[in-house]
Length: 291
Ligand code: GUN
Image 1 (cartoon, helix red, strand yellow):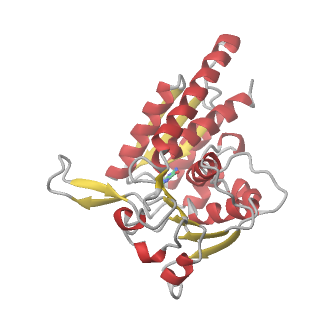
Image 2 (cartoon, rainbow, N blue to C red):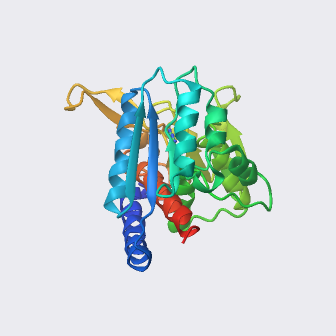
């Protein structure tokens, strides 16, 4: 049996179309557009590519894009000063500070300086605090885990009572993903590089979310037959046959795992496009709260 491919590109395109329609409707009614500001510190090529895509996609749905680039030597005061400026700018409804930041900067203080109402990444400590607590409502849910949940919902995957395993414990994906699955009444296990018997833990998963940043780490014999596998990994591996000299692979060995799983997201074309669609959705939500 070969797994059904969950087509994130198609789902994201559908969501972007709906956002585009709503942005046009609101523009006709108010003469205003949602504005998304991105802040990139330093020159990391992957981060540059992500920020470029975020700006391009926001313009494509009719939003205003503000792009700020600071040198890798920028000081804490400079970055926080820019964030405060954007907090005060009424044309900006969403602020995204691309991570990771250079090591000398205090990420927690910078993310905490973003106005709660403009925290479209959902990384402000108050939004994260609300996300992990029962019965609280964050203003925004982090984009990548939110995108994974939408893919699971749209694919009709039952989560109530399911064994969900999250491989990876990052602030950006693993931790918020585990919280969202728990709120959906799954039984959640978070595992990581120090966990004993990773293959054994993963084999118990009805739903496996891989977010560790290790190319093709999850093998076919780590998978329960019929399980749903969500691959969040975006790893650049050398490929002399590619024009860029590299290609992207996930954390999951796709060729092996697709022979065992019931459903699987490909890389590229799975979770990646959903992250940006959710960012646009969060920016639209931020704007709608102001009209
Ligand atoms: N770096 C990797 N993923 C993300 C994300 O979703 N948002 C931000 N700001 N930085 C990231």
